[in-house]
Image 1 (cartoon, rainbow, N blue to C red):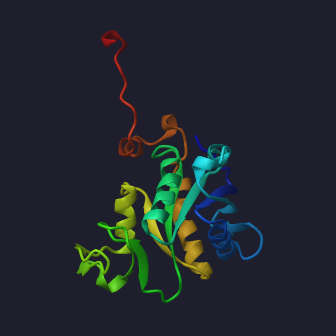
Image 2: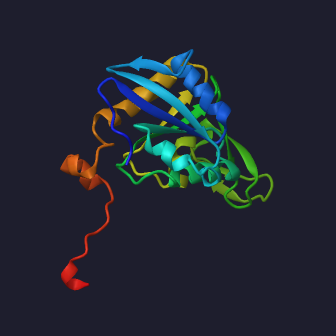
Image 3: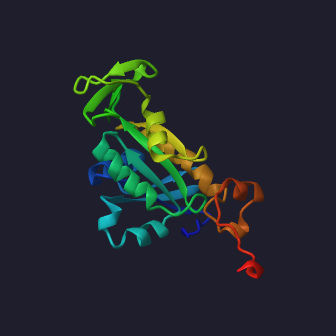
Amino acid sequence: MSAAASNDQVTILALSVHEEMGENFVKDVCGTGNTKKIGDHRVAFDVLAGDPRLNAAWDDTVKNANGVVILARFLDVISLDKIKAIYRRLPGEGDLALAILVIRENDESDFKMSCPVCGQKLWVRDNDAGKRGRCPNCKKAFTLPDQVSHLRAQLALPDSIDVLRVIGGKSESAVAAVQQLLKHVQGGLIESAGGMDQDVLKQSTIRVQINPDDT
């Protein structure tokens, strides 16, 4: 279970494949240092990078945060494998305020993914989403996705998790993403199930209770 947020202090953990991406995001939000007053909270940021399968302290670090953002950029097979490892290591739905942030450069109009047939890395233009494309390597045709929908499908994300685009180097874009995440922190999604609103609880997946008389 994640840490409880105080009235004036929230800890947000930036999870990323590469540490530089996390550090750049924190810089975009805070400018200098690692804290910023956003709304009613003073938000402290930390960065946790790399493969959680190789970091013995990863779980405890996440447990001490009030919320997390997973930073993604390229969606080729290798990058997605690492992003999936990060996402799947998180606590269950409803235990932690979470947002997925797709980092884009200013005026960037395409993204990297892999051919679903042969794995060839491909650049796909945003305005080609929904069209039929063909991989130059294996010559197989497939429907081109948009970046956010492709990431949602690959991670099998529930609708309750926000996937937001953030423009690298743009403070207002990064701050807006954090403000969206804070709505979930303030809404109590990081509280224990016993203190959760029943409608929120029903949206989460919980383990069925076994009747002791039937065991």
